Image (tube, rainbow, N blue to C red; front, side, top):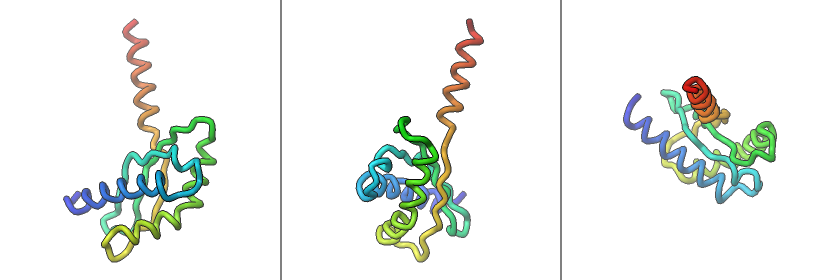
Length: 112
């Protein structure tokens, strides 16, 4: 992966996080954390990995919030970034934290 691509991924991660926190009007968006961004080599698609802090609302509802706000987020990104074409946004649930917690539990239980 090139340095330029990594830097752009970091910038998109930061900008999408800020847009979710301060620009999107849906209150559920405040509890969404962007954990990672993966760009394709041609910069046409950005996979945005998210976790949800609000456990009272289902993951499906929170993903629906992201899908509704996708166009707005992309247009905001376009105004903040100086790139020719803003990538299409694909939101994915990042379950690595849950998997890590499960592995920790298994390791703790195996030591006993």
